[in-house]
Length: 142
Image (cartoon, rainbow, N blue to C red; front, top):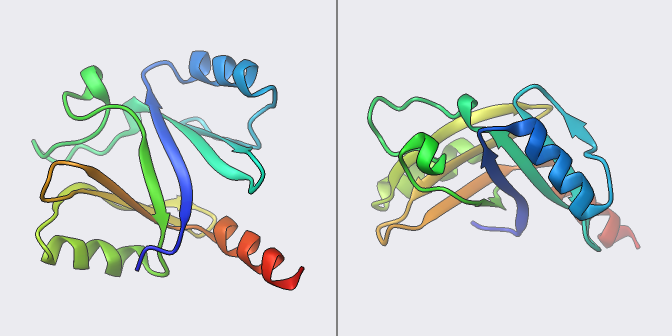
């Protein structure tokens, strides 16, 4: 079911400061900019590194959500693994004993991501990511 790493997403209560800091660290501007999210393509395989403004995290009515101290739940990165169908993969993981963390969400442009807490307390991110598919197709054609 997990086909490969797609996106590492960090959270920040100050998106502009985080964007500026990571632009300096990485030496490149983000290729994707929205009010709630920015994303860089980094490394040899153009992996996606994103930063989400933590005020846009979903409110799950008391369920755990990311956001570190600001959100009260686990903080840090969510590593997303590419899946062909994020909704189906999310439901399967819940059926297998995972707890909801972030329900499937359309990030726009056919990117759909979600996250669960596995039975051992780890955050597992899943995402249908067209960029992952494009990179795979380029590698197959070359």
